[in-house]
Structures are given as structure tokens and as C-alpha cells.
Image (cartoon, rainbow over all chains, first blue to last red; front, side, top):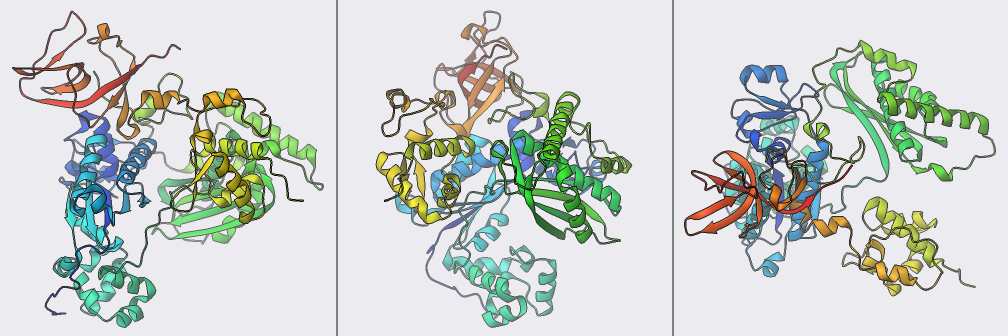
Length: 437
Length: 195
């Protein structure tokens, strides 16, 4: 569309929403805690053989997220490859959100490395302009966490998210309402949050190539083409807030979930079922460790192209041993598995948790059998404590051995440096600096 | 006759929840915690607990714990209903070792010491130090610093010639950075744990 850009509104910030995005978060955390890694090209994801995060040094050498390690090493022979230390990343992520909460109570933890903050009205409180508050936040995170973040400041979540992506790393981009018309013509539709490859291609067929083209189409036209989400995006890009912040802390309702991505995608039904049962066993180990029982089980399979199928069941009585659920999980698996499809991950989620120590037998149960299974669980746990996790497992687990093994047995640095009194399960909630003084 | 509310039991349940979750429960979670079928039933005990100063309302219409719940009190045995025991009263103003040692939780890191350059300051190899990032050191603060590419643990000082770093060990001498100096953090506490 060749509409000459004219302002959409005269106000600067009727709302002030920040999007805070950690720059190469995982590798930046590694570099913050281990100064030896600073300035070096590093990546995480050693345990999967695929790059989960690449530092800016690595990115400048052409190493990107999602590339296999083997390909990456060809591009960059001196690449530092680290196993993912999610515990430490989560600790640092929590700290980032805590710092954001110093500036406003309205914070949405969108994912481990990005979040939104509503700072509307905080100008008079801090006696600073909105961009200055944003800069302050950015500097505080940098000083205290040694991490850089890129921040977008605008009127809605969608605009702020595009803005944070505009200058990276360590960028700050403010798009006030009276400048939206200058900003959006520079944004290709592919950079709009929520417009995937297919929608971008569809829009291009109608000559809509930039976010500016998008908002200059009439709303009903967009609604007809892309339905409600598209229409909401249309409003958001025009500076009208329709997607409020989700301020609930991202603490899931009490549940235990275990999922594992295969080292290589597989279409072998026996192997996948074995992996699924292995996840169930891991989840049950955790249940027993916390003296819990579960009532519901959910099973999910993720295909090679990242679509997910899931099914769940509520059991007639609570359980804490894999044995009790095997018939159920077999049925759920049969429901979900499609012959000839290649999958990359299986997962199990247990919900409806209750305290095992208050467990009461119901009238129709066989207490003897229950006690037998209970003591089986105890013995399994005892053996695993002495000889390692999954020393003893259900017979289906034998299929797992068929999978090719990769070079991925390097534990994370933090695991090799346990402090006195820390156990395999419980660690101090403070990040450990990796430097020699 | 109105239902009797066992308020001490509710307090115990809330403390247990706080210990497990580290936050205040929602009304829905409280209903489950107290074994009520309806969220509405929670309002009674909540009002009572607010009157007694165990809970307070936040601006977002939720409830938050006061220090009467969050103070790190171990189980103190059974408590007579009605009045808190004097022992409990005395413990209300206590803080945990965590709060005692860590002033700014978001900026604090642990570091295991390997060298002996600060041994006369009581920091031995193998000790852990709590390092705080993000503030400018003052004279005689113990800092971790990178001097000309090497990381070290030293006293921080400043005189007319500029910044210097002093060891606490006669076998080492004062360092003045020749090219670069970067402060990695200030040591706020030393922890030595005997196995």
C-alpha cells in the first residue's frame, strides 16, 4: 500500500509497556559466571547435539540456534560447546524478573529469558521519562547480573516485542504513539510477533509486506483473512492494548512433568513407548521422593515438525508406582501414535497430587497388593540410590538400548562442583562463580 | 450455631504452605488447604487472620503473609489455642541465616576461594565467599578484581597514585594495575563449613 505514513495518534505513551529480552540468554549466563568464556564463541546444547543458544561471538561466525554441533564445528573450529545448565539459567532468570519487579509490580514472565512490564504511570514515581526508566532497568540488570538485555518500549505488548528485537544486543528502542507510523513501515511482516511463515506468505499474496501495510488494511478484511488473532494483532499494532499482561507468576499448579527429546528423531514404536515409560518411571521416582501420589496422567508425543499430540486420563485411585499406570499409559500411547510418523520427544505429566502419608485404602482395594507394590517402589529407590538412576527398570526399557548413543555424557560444570552438604537433588539457590582467585 | 474455626490449625497449614511454596496461597489454594469445598468459605478465616495480624490484603485484592507467618520459625510444638505462646512471640523478629548473610539477593553470588593471598584476613583456600555485584567498592573492601587479565581476591584501596590492591599475606605485595582493572564484585561474607 502506498499510503503516505501519517501519525496514528498524537499521544506519546497512553500506556507504557516494556518487553525485556535477554540477549543470547543461556550463553550469556555462562559467560557472566565464567569470565574465561567472555569474548569466546560458545554455544549450549552439548547434551542434545543441537545448538540451543549461541553467543554473539558464535553468531558472528555463522553459528546459529538449531544447527547440529557437527556443522557448527566445521564453521568455527574453536567453538566452546557447553552442556545446558538449566538450573543456573532458571536462577538467573528469576533474578532478572525480580529486578523488573523493583520497577513495577506488573510483570509478566513470558519465558525463561523474556518478559513484559507495565510501567504506565511510573514516570511521576521515579521522576523520569519512560525511556529513562527502561534504561535504568537495563543498567541494573547489567550491573547486578552481568547480563545484557534488549528492551522495547511502546504502547502494547506486540509493539514492545517488535521494538526489543529492532536493536540487539543491549539495545533500547522506544516507539511512542506518535512515532508508530515511522516505525512500522520498516518492519517486515515476518518480524511481527505471532505471524508465522504461512501467514506471512499468505499476506504477501495480497501485497501486505510490512507491518504498516498490515494496519492500513481495514480491520474486517484482516479479520476475514486471519480471524480473531489477526484482528487483535491489528489493534495492538495500532497502539490499542487488547492483550493484557499475564501477571500470575509462572508457577504451574502442583504437577510433576518429565519429558525427553530423543537424541535422534525416531519412528520406532517400541523405542518410543520405552522412552515414554522411562519418563513415567522418572516421574514416579520424583513422586516417591516427595511422598506424593498422583491421580491424573497426561501423555504427549511431539512430532519431528513440532506438532504435539496429547491425551490424559484420570485414574480411579491415586498412584505412585509406574506399575499401577502401565495399562493406562499403554492405551493412551496407542491412541496417540500414528504409524509412519517420526517423533522427537515424549513427555509425561502427573497432576492431582496428594500426600502419600495420608493415604487411605478404599473399601474395594486389596491392601496386600498395594503394600507389595509400595515395597517394590521402596526397594527400587534403594537400589537406585546405591547404584544410580534407572539401574532397575521395567522390561520395556530394554528397547532404549537400541538407540544410538552420542557424545553427551559431560555433566555441567556446576554438577562437578558441588558444595559441601549439597546433595544430588538439593543445591544452594545462589549461582556459583566459576573463576580462580 | 456458627461453625467454630480452629485458627491455630489454619496458621499451621499456612506456615507449612509458606515453607513449601515460599509465597502466599490464592483463595482457591486456601480452600483446598483448609479442606473447604468452596472458595467463599475461606473469607471467614481470612478475615480473622487479618484481624490477628497474620495476613494482610494487598492492593491487588490478594492476601499476603505478614512476618508472623513468614518468620522462620521451626515447629514449636503444640500451641494453646487463642494466644500465641511467649516463645513464639519472641521469635517473630528473627531472620534466617540467608537473610543475615545476603543483603541483596539478586546481586549475590558464591565463589570458592582457591588462593591464599587473603589468609591473614581469615579467608582460607576452600572457603566460600558471598560476592555482591553492581556496587562501587569502598576503601578496604575485599573485592574480586581482574588485574591485567588475572582474577584475584584483594583489599581495595585508593591513594594519590590511583587504585591499588593489597593482599592479606606477607608473601605477596601490593598490586597496582598496569593496564586494566575490572571489579567483579565485593565480598560481603565468608562461609567455612566443617564437614
